[in-house]
Image (cartoon, rainbow, N blue to C red):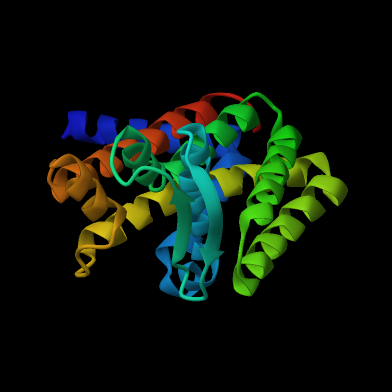
Length: 237
């Protein structure tokens, strides 16, 4: 009984210390978790994860030497990135591979900047990425989505007090991280077969769809853990 009580007390003490030392980070994580976990908010905010996802496809396509035709974002929060080039080969494989890890990697990169007390820089980098994405968007809803997201981030970056910028940047990082996990969860549960990134990767490489989904899971969870260590052990309080 004594050991059990001691263990519980240690957990309580650790949580109390965390709340006292990192209230902004903890609140940002809680808000992001609600936004991702509650279906009503996820329906309206998931498009931000889709923007990151399609941006990942687009960036990797360009880096792989493929031609980028354009990006389309739809009201059902789905998206499509079209590139030109060889119909098989490493370039196309990496292009399909670039989508699902993109939100998680962006969240992790943002967490690195926030932990280094560079939340303002992180927000301006986000704006730059959104502007770059906007150039390649080819439908009206996509333009509206990117502009609306950029306007919100830009307003905080331009007019927000440092404390607000810290909290907003941390919340955005957590949202991308948690959103990356939920997107993979939805991919795994999807009953549609043949058109997903995992299906296309399976067709191109011969590696089963489930193995690609597992890889996406590992990357998404690892990014959450790594970002948690960064945000809860350094940077903003």
